[in-house]
Amino acid sequence: MTSQAKAYAAQSASTPLAPFSFERRDLLPDDVSIDILFCGVCHSDLHTARSEWDGTIFPCVPGHEIVGRVSAVGDEVNNFAVGDLVGVGCMVDSCGHCPSCKESEEQFCETTGFVGTYNGPDNVLGGHTFGGYSDHIVVKQGFVLKIGHDEKDLAAVAPLLCAGITTYSPLKHWGAGPGKKVGIVGIGGLGHMGIKIAAAMGAHVVAFTTSPAKIEDAKKLGAHEVIVSRNADEMAAHANSFDFILDTVAASHDLDALTGLLKRDGTLTLVGVPEHAHPSPNVFNLVFKRRSIAGSLIGGIAETQEMLDFCHQHGLVADIEMIDMQEIEGAYDRMVKSDVKYRFVIDMASLKA
Ligand code: NAP
Ligand code: ZN
Image (cartoon, rainbow, N blue to C red; front, side, top):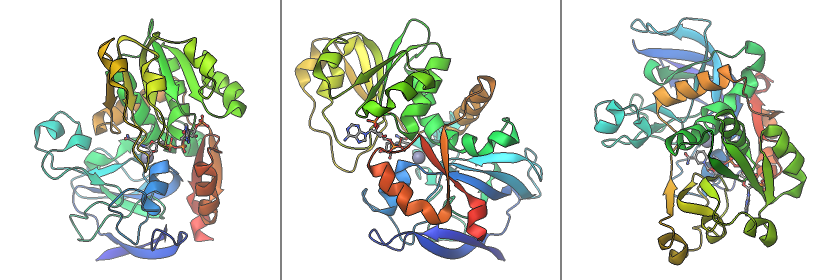
């Protein structure tokens, strides 16, 4: 027995997302069934739906910033009850016993790899997983997050499930906090959360943008300084001064302009995953000050819960623009033009229309 889900899917890389239905599995003893109320729109959804990365399996139902209400729980579920407000992020399963899974770094699962909320292998029904641009989802309880925020903020909590954890995890890992000068590059969905979280951690936050129109917003989000990255003089004024820079940009660009701003032993961490590779970085910039270029992938489930609780305690949610499901293609087109303030969130009630 399965249940039919209403959704929006891309049937190919070049067709617009359109109504689609498919089957969700029936509850296993360890499963939670969730009525999806809101789903954030991540640039990864666009990269995947338009097959900008290799490996999209069609039909593709994107969406991994899911919030909603528990509608049913399996017999062995002890952590969640019907009516709870919960979230689901980028993963719905992993092997559970490799060293990374044991350390709750499931995103780095070493045996099977993590199961993506969409475009991953569906280990129960076969085929591939379908994400949050849908009316409900069935997820193993170990991959369901508790939401402590007030229900009125629920839509603005959705983006924390990817944009929040993808910035929180590297900021914490590389020690953002008091006395540290931290750069956040790109003020989109990830970047605007990066600014808020780094400021809440107590760092001195500098935002880098290609959009001068976002300068004032960046300050309101918590940036102490804002640099227009296309202005070479503004960039040069910050040479050799950053402890850490987090790069969220979704397009290929020159990394040397950023590595040159790091102090000795500073790190530039990439979380943006553009369709086309960045130009190869200049090695001199790295060797002379023992600087690093690193990468980071979302965050584990325990850390995602920690991030949600941190955001709740600090009163942080995303700045969102609510859309109907039917408006998704227009939202994608605006995202490509960096015209997002600062995360689109789909009101799933519109799916019923
Ligand atoms: P987004 O909302 O579209 O924001 C990206 C921002 O990058 C834009 O708003 C823009 O900010 C800046 N930008 C765009 N084109 C640029 C260019 N040519 N040069 C310089 N800056 C440019 O995207 P997002 O949802 O935050 O996602 C960002 C990237 O992270 C995507 O590639 C996504 O797939 C990836 N991602 C990675 C992970 C992970 O685990 N590593 C998780 C989620 C997403 P300004 O207008 O301020 O310049
Ligand atoms: Zn995402």
